[in-house]
Length: 208
Length: 307
Ligand code: SF4
Ligand code: SF4
Image (cartoon, rainbow over all chains, first blue to last red; front, side, top):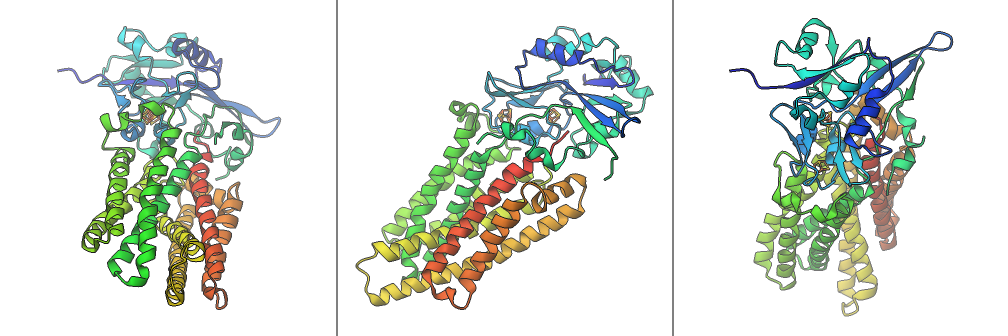
């Protein structure tokens, strides 16, 4: 019997040219409102002029195997599909936002138009139709690869088998399913922005 | 950790999920649990001079616990769907056991209050003893809500539920002192001189108990901060956020100095310990301090960026 499907994504940052096409594709496909993002590109700049370089990291929900968001959701609106995609049932979500507070990756958001929580679902509707997620489809350099990692013939499985890959915040024990090749450590960490975050501009985000 | 020159050129940060409604809810459940425990202790001791305190607190506990969950419902993005909590429960989530506790506890509290007011001592005692674990869990679970959201270093500590419980006791006793003192001053006309004197003594004793609970609270906070400062990078950031960062004023200034040390001095100081006014001022300060603590924990815990 073939093993169960387990969808995963590999992002090869050596190929990524930081064009933001994935962000745009995601916005269009999933009708993501202004102010929030299900996919985006984090860009950091290292070093002092003139010895500087930029590093980037496409960010999206990791559709974790041990998704803390699903464990903590009081209504099971957030649940895991058989194939590993973590979903949010938009008719069941009460908007308690506990999942947002629990997710270590800041990839969930409140949809300001629908007043429920959403995130990236690996475009489950496209996957069910036999397509790949919109970001993967759009990526001009084929830096993003999506597929069933339990199928050893899939490109994802082969990339995982032949490359050094990392995930973000492995220590969180969520078993993320978005793997990066050649990701920069500072781009993956949250150290830099640290404490001033609260005063600088985020008051707008703070609602009483 | 030294990263050299690093600037984040672009990234997305989403809105803080939990806002002060949640902190306020923690504050009210804390008050409720605190007053319930005091009420039961007063009932169990059964001494005549504790009667008034026992009665006031028996009423305060369920009243506060009816206000508290309103904050939770208001905080929902879909308030009209709150019943999903009961229909589609998930036992892995602390919010689920919270929603059942929050239903059971006020019911229990109301029955208990009826028993206390109708002077059915035996029933009140039994219900009270049964109610204490409920009161403790109703407030203890709020600590778990924070502690089990593992993304946030400030919350994800084993000390969190205990800190919440102990600070609940502090603010609960504070509230009882305030209410009892108001009653003593303005609403207790029939009592004779002697009765008045014992009532005052009880209130003062209560405020002194509060000071000892504050000491326990301070010890817990100290151990939490010490461990945060020596743990991993995120935990260190969280600890520094409270000590020197944007929440230092609220944490050190309001929570520790104004809300803990000054009240402690007021109710234990050789002169002021005999004054009811001092006890009331201390209790007000204590409650300001605990409210600030809820703010620092809930909001501060979310301000260290995740990515
Ligand atoms: S990245 Fe966050 S939202 Fe996505 S599955 Fe993991 S814990 Fe849940
Ligand atoms: S906001 Fe919605 S999806 Fe998130 S934990 Fe609450 S009910 Fe679940």
